[in-house]
Image 1 (cartoon, chains in turn red, purple):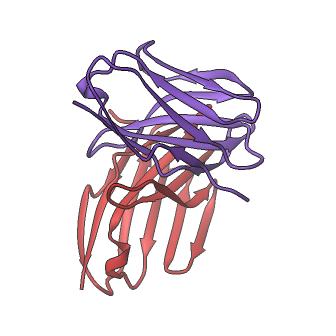
Image 2 (cartoon, rainbow over the protein chains, first blue to last red):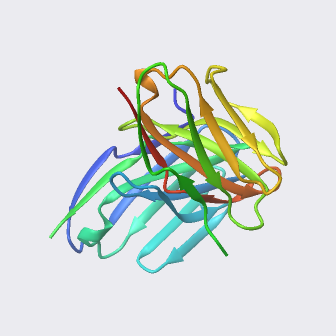
Image 3 (cartoon, chains in turn yellow, cyan):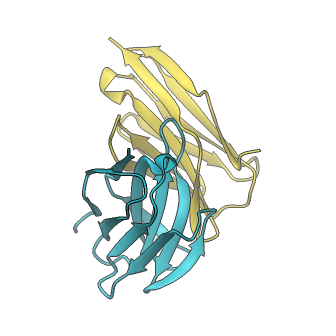
Length: 107
Length: 113
């Protein structure tokens, strides 16, 4: 069983839709990261969370430490949001990554 | 504040060859971690360097080795390349132990033929 599970694996949305990507983890962590990766590209850090909720523009990230669960929400989605979204947890001295969610937003 | 720079961006090597990938950490960061991301998968932890010493290693064979320099930049060396080593290699710099404030590089795409 992977230590970090993301769902869904693939997501296709229409422009303007509200999107939710979920991340569950099985170990005690010090922080959780949401990352964005465009095709062939490197990783951009979107959020780092250890509790509560953070918002940046149309992106919102929440974490529930007791339930070991985090969600990434995108409001008013746009085709430029199309990317792979990866959840990663800080576990000991390393990051453990989920497999990623492939998001495609159609216009 | 500079970000994390990786070089080269793309590389093609022949099976059995050796390769060196480079990473310049973000200013002020003293920890560098390397990850391998195979196509369609999440990144896997290779190892981490903190203050020039290896500080944790994932499930990778000894032909994957690394260095960290006094300026906290780092190299990843892979000997005896295999076809399965074809992947995106990501470097992330961070601060302290346990590490925090991760900043990621754009990666080096290695193709082994």
